[in-house]
Length: 260
Length: 295
Image (cartoon, rainbow over all chains, first blue to last red; front, side):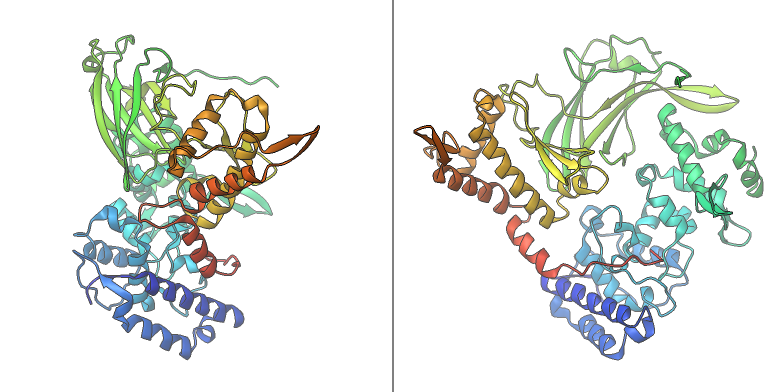
C-alpha cells in the first residue's frame, strides 16, 4: 500500500482505539495478551483497512508488510521509504507517523514487550516524550546519525533502548551528529555485533548508593558539553575529540582498538 | 568558602547590543516552517589573527544547536565594512531562537589538533533600538514575552510602569516550552485568558501606568485587532461616585471582548481558532497515565 496519512477523523479514531487497547491492558493487570483481545484486534484490522480515514502522501513509496530483526532494520526501511518526501513536511507530521504505526502495528506491538505507553504509538510534539515513538524514532536516528544509529537501535522494534534514551535526551546530540559517531566508536562491540553492556547509564545504584559509571555514555556527553564551551568541536574530527577524552576512557579505547 | 576560577585562556567578548555592536541579528521574515534572519557583522575593533574562522550558529532556547555556518575568516570580516548575511532557520520560532557567533583558532593541545574558541557572542534576542516603547520597531517583539522563574504558582504577570509586561512561568514544569511552541492548546487557552484579563485590569485600574509607553502600545494593538478605530477604550475599571467606587460594567465587557479576540479567536497557521483546538483537545484528552517501567 502507498504511504498515507490520517485524516483528522481517522487520527482521532486511531487515538481512541489505542486508548481502549491501553485501558484494556491496564484492566488485565498489564497482561498484553489478555488486554489486546480478539475484539480489539478486529477493531484494529477494520481501521487498518479503512482507506476513507487517510489520504495518500505525495512522493511516498509503497509500504511492505514484513518482519524486522531490530529497530535499526526498521529505521533503514523507513528512511528509504521516505527519502523522496519533503523532509520538513514529514518531520513532525503525526498523522503520517501514526498511520505508518497503524500499518506496521504488529511490528511495534508485541506480547513480548513490557511497556505500552501511548507515546510509543501516538507521536507527541512534546520534546520530553517525542522520541519514544517506535516508528518515527528509528527513522529519525538513521536519518540523522546514519550507520552509528546501530548503537541505539539494536533491540527488537517493540522495545525502547536505554542507549537511545540516554543519548537522545541531551540537546547537544540533536545536531552535533559527530557525537553519535564518537559514541558508536566507543560503545559498539564490533566483534559481537551489539552495544557494550554496562555503559548506557551514567549512574547506577551500588550498595544502595548512587554511583557514577566511569566512561559511560553520560560521562561522554558531559565531556562533549565541556569541550563545546572551549573548543569549536564542529570543526574538529571525531578522532581528535576521542583523543581529548580523559583517562577513565582508556580501557574502552583499548577495547575498541583506538590509540590513546 | 571562597570559589576559585581558573582562566585557562582568554575568550574575547563580541558585542551584540548597545552602541555600534560587533554583530546585529535582525528578524527578517517569519514563515510556517521557520524564520529568516539577517546578520550584520563588523569585527574591526578586535585583534584576532587574520586566518581565524568566524562561525554563526542558531539554536533553540532549550539548547539544540544547528550546525554552525562559516561566515569567513577574520580578515574578511574586519576590514571596516559591515558584512550582511542571510540565513533561514528551520523549525524554530522567533521567541525561542538564540544565536552564537564565535571565532575559532586552529591549535595543538598535547599533540591533538584542536580548534579553540577565542571570541564569542551569545545572543539571546534580536537587535532592537533602546527599549523606550516608542521606536516603532514592532515586528520582532511579542507584547507579552514569556520567562521562566522559580515561582510558587504556575504562572503570573510581571508588570512595572515603563517596562514591557512579562508572563512569568514556573520553571521545571515545561509550561514555557509548551506555550512557546503551541503544543498544548488547553494550557495556552487557560493561561492566556487569565493573564490577559489580569493585565488589562491592572492597566485600567492602576494609575501608575497612565504614562507607560507599553500600555499605549497594548491599547494601540487592541484597537488594530478589534478592527474599529472608533471603539472607545474605557478610562478605568472603576466608576467613582460620591467617594464610592464600583466596577464599571462597560470596562468589564470590553476586557472580555479583548480576551475573546486575542485568545479565543487566535488563529494558527492552518486557520484553526485556539478555542476550537481547546474544545477538540478537551474532548479527546486521555486519562492520566501511569508511568511504565519501560519507556
